[in-house]
Image 1 (cartoon, rainbow, N blue to C red):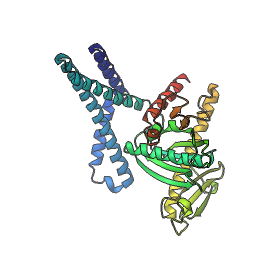
Image 2 (cartoon, rainbow, N blue to C red):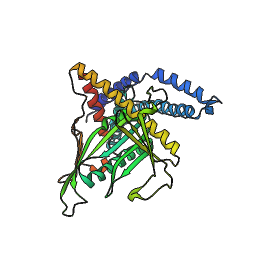
Image 3 (spheres, helix red, strand yellow):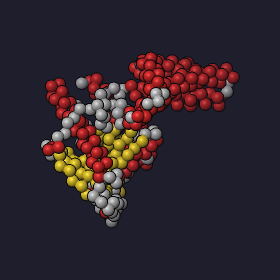
Image 4 (cartoon, one colour):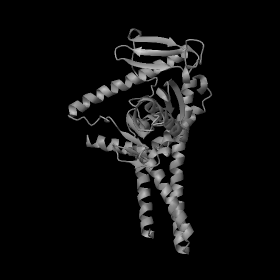
Amino acid sequence: MTSVDVSADLRDLKATLASVEAVLDLPAMRRERDELEAAAADPGLWDDAEQAQKTTSRLSYVQAELNKLAHLHERLDDVEVMFELSESEGDASARTESLSELEAIRKSVDELEVRTLLSGEYDERNAVVSVRSGAGGADACDFAEQLMRMYLRWAEAHDFATQVYDISYAEEAGIRSATFAVNGPYAYGTLSVEQGTHRVVRISKYDNQGRRQTGFAAVEVVPALEQTDEIDVPDEEIRVDVYRSSGPGGQSVNTTDSAVRITHVPTGVIVTCQNEKSQLQNKATAMKLLKAKLLQRKRDEENAKLDELRGSATASWGDQMRSYVQHPYQMVKDLRTGHETGDVQGVYDGNIDAFLEAGIRWRRSGEKAA
C-alpha cells in the first residue's frame, strides 16, 4: 500500500465520519445530552423509578456515542501522524502498526455507518426474541438452544442486558421454544434482520448410526412495548391459564402455580412467562409480551397492505434465511446477503456482527428499491 493509498483512505474515512455525524445530527445529540444531564441532576428524579432508569440509561448511551465520535477523530489524527513519521523515518514496524490501526478505525466507522441505517419507527427499542424449534427432531431442538445461546452471547459482548421470560425444554435435548428480552440501544433494529428460518446440517449426536441430519429453527423478533404504545386488549379476548414452572427434565422449580400462559383468542397468539415466583408478576410480564406481539402483528398487516398496493412481495424473508453447515464442510452462509464464514463455532459463540451488518445493508437496499 503506497502513501497515496493511505492518504486516500484517510480522506474517505473522514468523509464517511462526517456523513455519519450529519445523519446523527450532532448538535441535536449535544442538546439532548445537556437536557438529560439536567434531568438526572433533579433531586426528584427517582420519585418515578421507571422514568429515572430510562433517563439515566439514555444519558449513558448519548454520552457514550458522543465520546465515541470524538475518540474516532482523535484516532484518525493520531494514525495520520503515525504514518507520516513511519514514512519519513523508514520505520517498517511503525508503518505496519499504523496500517493495523487504520483498519481498526475503518471497522469502527463502518459500524457507526450501519447504525445510521436504523431509522425505522421502532429500531431504537429493546428487542423481544423468540426461538422455536422446527422440523428435525432432537437436532432441531438442540439447534434452537444453540441459537438462543448465540444471541445471549452476542448481547453479553455488547454489554446489553438480557432477561429470559420463558423456556420450554424438549424431552431428549435442547428446547422447544424460548422467549427473552435484549435490552440495549437499537437492539430491535439490529436483531430484526435475524427473523426467519435458520437451518443446520450436521452429523446427528442423537442418531445411533451417526448419519447427517438437517434441522430447522424459527426466530421471531419484535420491539419491546413501551407505555406510550396504544394497543387495547379487552379481558374477554384473552384466556389465562396458570401452572407450575418447570426446568430441564420436568423437575419442579416452584411448588405453586406461578407460571402463566395467556392466549389471545381472536388471533391464537400464545405467550408464557415463568421467570418470576409471583403469579401476578408473571401475568404482568406475559401481558406485556402479548401486547408486543399484537403490535408487531398489526405492523405486519399494515406493511402487507402497503406491499399489496405497491404490487410487490419483497417484504417476505423466505423459508430459509441462513444455513449453518457442519458436515461435510464448515460454513455459515446467509442466503439473502451472500455473507459467509467458515468459523461456525465463532458464530455460535455470538460473533454475528458481520451477518447483522450485511443484513441491515441488504434490508436498506431493498427498501430503496421498493
